[in-house]
Amino acid sequence: MTALSEPAVPANPGWLHRTEAWLDDKGKGAWIAAMVLGFIFFWPIGLALLAYMIWSKRMFSKSCSRRKSWHSHMSAMKPSGNSAFDAYKSDTLARLEREQQDFEAFLGRLRDAKDKAEFDEFMDERVRDNQDGADKGEPA
Image (cartoon, rainbow, N blue to C red; front, side):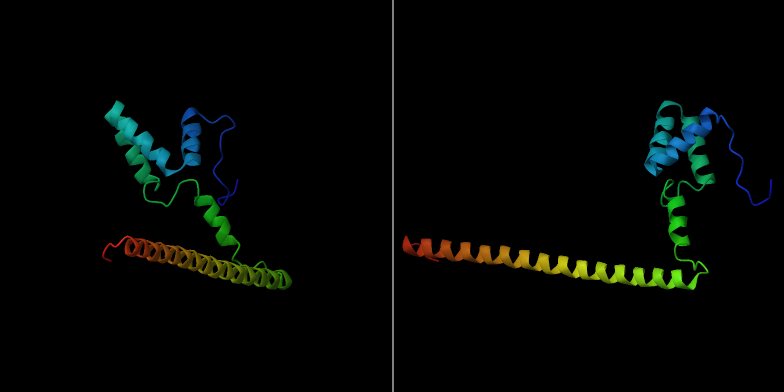
C-alpha cells in the first residue's frame, strides 16, 4: 500500500463506522441532533459527540455530506491537458453563464411586470372606491 492511498475500510465496518457514515449522509443537522440527544439522555455521550465533531471539523464545516461534492466541482475547473476539450469546456461554461444572466434578467422583468400589474390594479380599485364614495355623497 502506498502512502498516498486511501485508508483501508474494513470489509464489515462496525456499528460506529456505519453510524458515522449514516450521520454524514444526513448532514450536519443529524450530527447536532445526535449530540443534543446525547446531552439529554446521558451528558458524557453528548460531550463526547461535541468533542468528536470539533476534532473531526464537522462542527465548523459547511456540511458533512457536501464536502466530497465540493472537491469534485473544483476539479472541473482544472485544465485537462487536452486543448480542444479545454476550449470546448470554457465555451460551454461561458454560454451557460450568459444563459443564467439572461434568465435572471427575464425573471427581473417578470417581477417588474407583476409588480406593475398589482400596482395598476390597486390604483384602479382606489379610483373605483373614490368614485363610489363621490356617487354616494361621501367626502373624499
